[in-house]
Length: 355
Image (cartoon, rainbow, N blue to C red):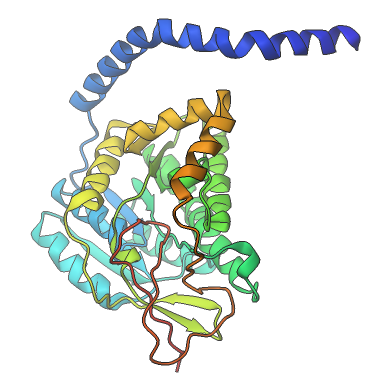
């Protein structure tokens, strides 16, 4: 036991600096190999012509833009969201952009039976599933200690975790038949802690770990692409919610502000291109990875940096979503940071009673 303790103490001092030196020495060679691999995969990228792609959360934001990217590649699309209103316009635009066939279905991805329904209907119509793209997500901006109604907690975890797991579980047998691929929309918060996003970050971390484990279980018979993004503007951060009794959140599909251009479209292009190349990871922007070194080797430096960056935001301005606190009628909309999310100053929220 003493020898083991001594060995661990020695490695605690030697391993971190030795790893950094080895990484610095091997970095040029790793970059060269990675570039060659990227070029090879780009040249032999998967042809999506007539392939079948299911996209959940396709009614807005990242999911919508991903639909357009697959449409440009001539894929057959199955667009899933809770309401069909918004999907009709996206389906029509996708057809104009090159999609061969487009199906739309209203479904709740946190319900296994509804996931079985849209996957089975897809297979019955097209006979196959090649890519499953999970983009359904929901974020929050409250401090945990401000919450007085915890009934919102399961909704956040359900959408961000089970809303990805259930479609994957149902689609896997059909993805095996086509050596298909699952694409997941995660976020940098899965490993980079930020205030007012505790439950969202926890759900995304669980999601990433789930798919990392599943990758080994599938043994490359079904590919997995994990996409992580930093702070980008999306329609989800500009939309409205309906809130029942100050807790339950539901999307209103008719958004007041449309997200066009900029980082959302760029991120969607990277995801689809990466999935077709067979990439295991897509990161936007990739420079966020530098924070991983600080988190592993100098966590105190990372903590100090974030504390200084956030020091100017001393006031706790909260969206009130899920806190259980009511908003007075006529009060101005609050700013919102959602899971697909951004630090956009145009983000807004309106809380309304369900009829």
